[in-house]
Length: 125
Image (tube, rainbow, N blue to C red; front, side, top):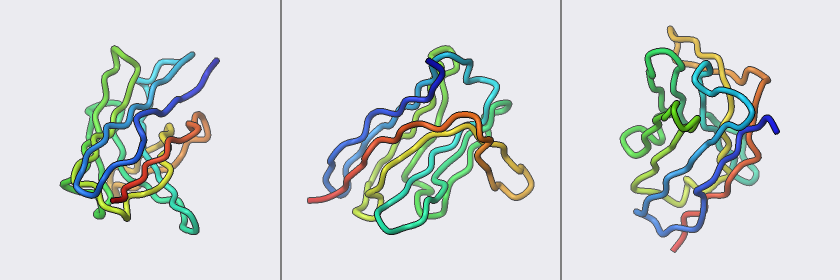
């Protein structure tokens, strides 16, 4: 089956860490830029971070800069999102997706190809 599958979400206390994984099956991930998006209840979906396919340039939302790190392991067909110093406002469903990157602006857009089913991240004491 051709899909992206996220994992690694869960319940964590404020200040804690989680590492999300986005694994591609049925296709090769290395030709795609990949982004993580999140959506909290009652809020619009927002882009969290993105990594390019070519030189692995990374992009981050201001709200997560310095706390989150995106990386990729093409040999494992996987993209990761390491999330440190988590805050309650990071609570959301996190999705990974294939994107196109506007390198001049740093904006990225879903290509319409692959979008994962999401993994829940809850930050609460």
